Length: 440
Ligand SMILES: Cc1ncc(COP(=O)(O)O)c(C=O)c1O
Image 1 (cartoon, rainbow, N blue to C red):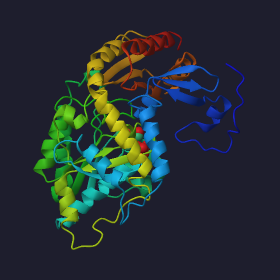
Image 2: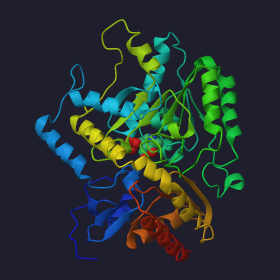
Image 3: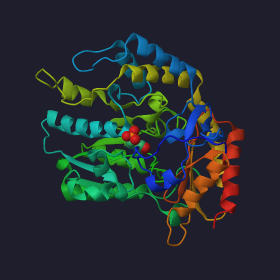
Image 4: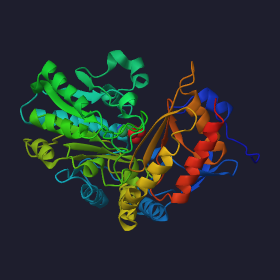
C-alpha cells in the first residue's frame, strides 16, 4: 500500500455500513475504468459486482460522460412539473422499447426506492380510478428488498430493515413465504426445480383478506440483496396466473434484473411473463447519474390519466424526475447496450459463469451455489456464534487480493459488469477459491 492521506472520515454517516469498523480500516476508491476500480493506494481492483449491481456497461464509459458533460452546458436542469424537456420524452420512449409489450408508459424517479414507492402508489391510484377504492392491500414477500422508503420496507421482508419502524409500517400489508429451501434446492443450476407450489400461498392470503381488498403483489423476480434467490421453475408464472384471476396487479421489482443482468432486457422477457408494472433503476443509467423509473402498463396509465376529469391526474413526482443529466445518461447507456449487444453477451457468458461458480462446490464452508444470468450466489455455512463473519472475511481478503465481491449475511454475490471476459470470471472465482481455503 502506498502512503495515501485519507480525508477526515468523521463527518460522513455511511449508508448500510458498519461505520465504526469501516473508519478504523477504510477501503477507499479513487477511480474506475472498464472492469477495474482503483483503490486509494493505487491498487487495481477487479469489479465483480458492477458497483452495486448497476454499472452494467463497465466503468468510465466515455459516451456517457460526454453526454452528461454536454447536457450540463446546454440544459443543466429543467423542472418536470407542468413543463418538459425533449430528452425526457426520448428517454421514456427508449426505456419503453425495452419493456414487455404494453408496459410503455414511463414514470421517472431517481432511485429504486422511489420507483417502488411510486409503483405502489400507481397501483392503488389505478384501482381507485376504476372505482375500486377498497383495493388497498399490498402483498410482498419474506426476504424481499424493495429499497428503504416506508412503502418499500413495508412490502419488503428483511427484518433488519423493518424492526426499528415496525409499528409505523404501512398497514394492510401481507407477505408471501420466501423461496429459499436448501434441503430441496441446494446447488441448483439456474432455476430450481422445486418450489412452484410456494406461489399457492398467495391463494390462502387472498382467501383470508378477500381479493376485493388487494391492490398488488410485489416481488423481485430474482431476489438479489437478500442473497441471490433464484425463482423456482413455474413459481412466477403461478403468481401471474393467480393475480390475473383475481384482478390483482403484479409488480416486478427489476431494479437489479433489468438491463441485461439476466441476459435479457428484463427478467419478465427472459421468463415470458408480463407483469403490470416494472420498477427500474441501477443499470438504466449505468449508475453514472442516479436514475430510476416505473414502466407501467398503458391500461393502468390510461385509467388514471384519461379517467381523470382534468387537472393534475396523479399527485406524485420528484424535483429531479427526468433530470436532464439522468435522461442524457439513460439515452447514452441504452445506446451502448444496444450497440455492443451487451445483453446477448451476458446471455452467452452465463453458462461460463455458472460453471465457474459451481466449481466452488467442494470449497470450504460452501453450503449452496445459486446462479441465473450473470449472477451467482455462494452461501457459506455461518461460523458458530458469528453469522456473517465468514462472508465478511472473504470480502476483505478478496479485496486485498484485488477483487471486489459483495456479501449479505453469509452469501457472497457475484454480478460483474456485462463486459466481463472469461479470463476475468476465472480470476474472480479462483481468487474466491483461494480465499475460502484461508477462512476458519
Ligand atoms: C430489487 C431492488 N429494489 C429496490 C432497490 C433500491 O434501490 P435504491 O438503492 O436505488 O433506492 C434495490 C437496491 O439494491 C433493489 O435491489
